[in-house]
Image 1 (cartoon, rainbow, N blue to C red):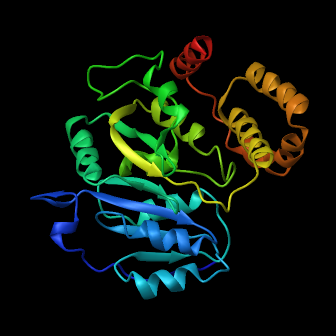
Image 2: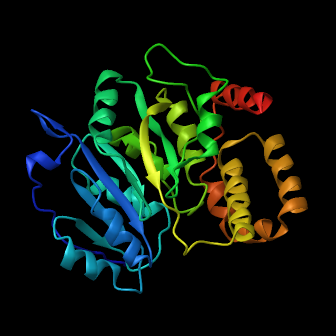
Length: 298
């Protein structure tokens, strides 16, 4: 049986929280592994309650945060859980909404209050995806353009264009809806963990929206996978996600495409294939229709 080491989170001062008179509404959940210096710098920028889930770092990250930032609630895992670590952080949060950040990203000042207001105003809303600005020159991430022109349009009860995918470190979720949908799982691990969750939230009738006015800063850590390695990992994630949720003809096309473009991803997916098959629950027709519409729009 595995265990975790945790430290309690003391109450943050009211002036630091994205609050109304009801108290804090948003917790920031951060998952990290072996990026101590970036982590210490970014954690200082977060407003409101913060939960750090440390994925078995070997560089003393958890100890350093406990020492230097005692207001952060630290959950120290004995093994690397990848994106599923965020799910543990959401379970630990005690606010109705959760904003995700990586150890190299943070929400711009005042954004968490806006996030909470959007969720308060739209009961169906389960995910808001923010505009992501990369690096010191704050380059707009290309995924923002994709989401802003979503072929799914904008529903009257949502604050922006509907999406069926998002970037975790630049998004916030309604806690109860996230947990009811299973959160991020141990099959995909990381990266590419968002797609299956997006499908399941949409299948449950929730809304996912891109909101241009929300801003997240992302200064990519130099301690990252090489582009070729990251492409393989994303291809693996896409294949396993399709096995879990897409129709078999789509899965077959994904297998062929992966074998042609990223054969290493196919090999790496095999050990997790049984778990993906156990978790298989094909998308309902309305979600598949949305995915086809997005694919046709390019």
